[in-house]
Length: 545
Image (tube, rainbow, N blue to C red; front, side, top):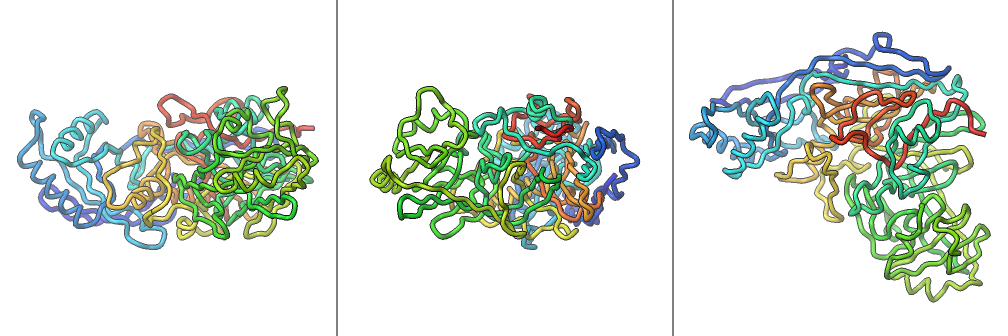
């Protein structure tokens, strides 16, 4: 089993423990040994490894958010008084108080603060009863499990796909739910519909209506050479090439730029296949500038030109929007204004253009049925331009786990996981992931970093070795009796143990799942079962003609 080695210093103060923890490399202490796992050769070039290791351990605690030293001391004093005076619970014994430093510093090397925890409980119900007691005295802690803090070993389910592209005779592709941006489906269902021998969940997406249109990829998405979603500029992505031979690569610092020329005037296209005015995870063009990526935030823009293609799905949601000017382009860039009644979905090659804000009147006055209109797009990364053609797929991800064989931490801030306060947009947290969210905070993005990056959750990631072997890893989590999950740094350690030199994180949490021959390899974390997602990464054993 991998190890997160801990150097601890414990100082007793009445019933208070102060703990400082610093992690070193190697996940849970031992390098990953695939020879000790359950192995299955699916087809030449594609193997599945299943690792079930460790024992259930730990306990539930009540935890504060990350707070300053001053706030931690105030909370500690209140809890010590509560221990002395007692609450409403019968036969209440004094509870252990711990002041804990997060296992890592922030992405720029700054200390995050301190966590205050209270009690040790065998069950979540016991912790919740004590939570109600603390609520009555104005201390608002949340229950969490001790193993979620990346501070000790526990039970884990780890699923790994090993792909050797030169030996695999099939295809590796991505597919949208029901081939539409507006549809979300379970990864297992997408795999079934595409006759995939194996599958994992894909990139981030809008999963609630206040983030945009549910199903919209929250970052770049390319399906069989067609751009489906613009980039969250500056983030990494996974590139899949199926022609002339199968190859996969991780792109760093991905950007996209879309433009439209109407007669002799050039316009920036703000986005593709998304709701106007809402940009989930930000990273958009704003005039001649680019807004920084901010994970799980919704940025807004009043003045936008959005373009839609046949991958969008039913046009009704766009056509009923108010305060917009719309027109259509056919495959020859001919302008028309009224769609035929015979289709609700755009034919291949046709596009719908929607203008809002200041562009509404500008385009309304300019665009005629005789106008000369053309569109263009560019996608590039640190490795150069990406020319889209049939057989190319791109899936968004982040943060970067490994680059040049080294764990990347500072890149997290640039890719949307900064701890600096945010003055634009609005936070967006899935209620199904609420266990990781603690609202009492000195700084919400510091706590977001602690909860999202440093705590253990279900994770999905992809890594590539120097020789081109590709590993897809799913660590199930949020259930201490089955699997505790992994932190972002622990996922980087897993990839190192597998020999990867570059790796990125994909969507995780309740989305994380691996499907092998129609069966999930573990238990997804949502209470109602496997989550419906925007896209899945599929392994097709026989090439599609």
